[in-house]
Image (tube, rainbow, N blue to C red):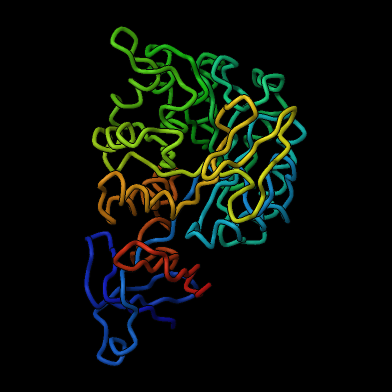
Length: 373
């Protein structure tokens, strides 16, 4: 049996002091009071759950669209692991049907070989709105075909998250996807509040990068943002890099939705965990300027944010507690994807994915299934 002892441990009951995690075969068997001997070697700081990122386009110099292979996934996962992401959904931005199928093959291989960090796949598109395409390639935006449905509904690719624009698909399509076990989120949409409401009532449960690339909230047209904030059961991804969303807009979303429905996401491109500056992207390029990624015309193009950076920003700039930020980075995305039975918390029966942070929220240690990284 392995053990990890820390001065503070963030459990589902809150922060507890001088506790020991008892681990067998990568799973937490119990959390108990530390013995005198264990206390002598305890870690100072706070033990929190590993991060769960549902939107990872790339990392380590790799963009999943460019290289939809298992080797690429391993590079991406390693790049994000150093920033505390112990579980992730590699994300494929709008692309052609063959690339979608290749991405599924890569994830299938990761699932079959029990890769410790890959839990499934996020298809962000291609069933989106050209009016709110952002950096997505417009020529690939389309309505669903039978071959793409077959890819989406594969049962060997773990958890599947699909982002759609409700004006581009029918309510029956959303119902069909949900019936197949796919988690449907709404994004890159110019839909009205009523259209978004219909999609939520059809089974969509989340919003991809709240505020960004969606119809705004105004006095006479609540839009997608209004629906996201109003529907209590809807989860919302939030990119807290201070470029995608103004800090006060992010603070408002957290205040309205709470830590149980706001998920921190990175929307990370290939730049994270690498020295990459310029990335070719379809018929344009994405350039890093400090902590911001844009195309030459100034369009935001994903981020170079990592999950620990998102947690730090949420704590230091938005006034959230470590407990609140940790939930938004771990338990909330795990619950959104139906993985809360094994991920997102420090509790008996969960994978022993844990992070040690100091009192200034600096990341000190990382464990994946009980193994110190």
